[in-house]
Image 1 (cartoon, rainbow, N blue to C red):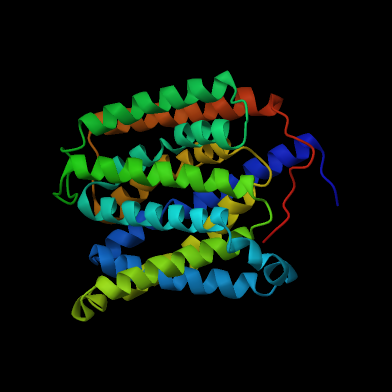
Image 2: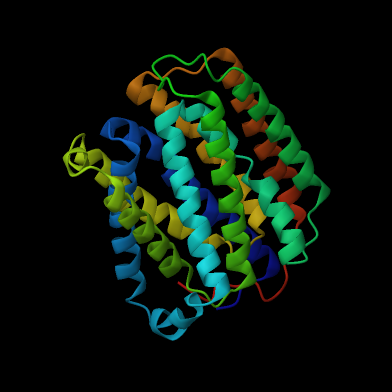
Length: 304
């Protein structure tokens, strides 16, 4: 079945939105687990990796296109996803969820820049305007990130660096997936997750691995992460990487809300104001710009 240009556009937006919404309570389950960085990385990585690889192996495309993973681009995607997951997990353990999620929202900017050099894409003015508005909101939140009730009392600076590092590597991995469409997206994401899991397993103290709430971290690794990241990687076949990053701002907006409900980690008024700016800029982008954007004809999903 073939889709029209507008059909591809709205399919991509829909898939990415579903992925972001499912992903939004992920940080809450990380908080509930009360685990250290390496334990979370191990459980989330191994569980997510096994689920994605088992699921993708059910499809013929897994067997025919697996060889493409063993390429420079394939290894680049794996490396970027491993780095992004590590930075995100470390940042969540270091400081407030709001700060990390708001800095992670800079991924559209990195995706747009990488798309220019790697894909030769022209990014619309509205994308840059939206990204700038989001950055203003993020800046407000970061400036007051050390005044959050019931949040980890780590370094705001280190947390911000982790968030930006996660955003940059995430943006690059999304662009590389579009650069090499023959790479099976779900499979390469599963391999990256397993890589994180094994790295964590090598570093974590055996005594710490089973401390904390295993059920909470397993709900994240077995359900939330596989479904959400599958949606987000599939969406790259239908729309620009910068658009995926912008739609992930849904997680940025909703994530702190779930954490507040579940742990009473309370962002201050400035951080809430920054979040509102992010949400409004995203809504403007989708409603005003995306209904007018067209995509290249051959922009269909080829892989699972």
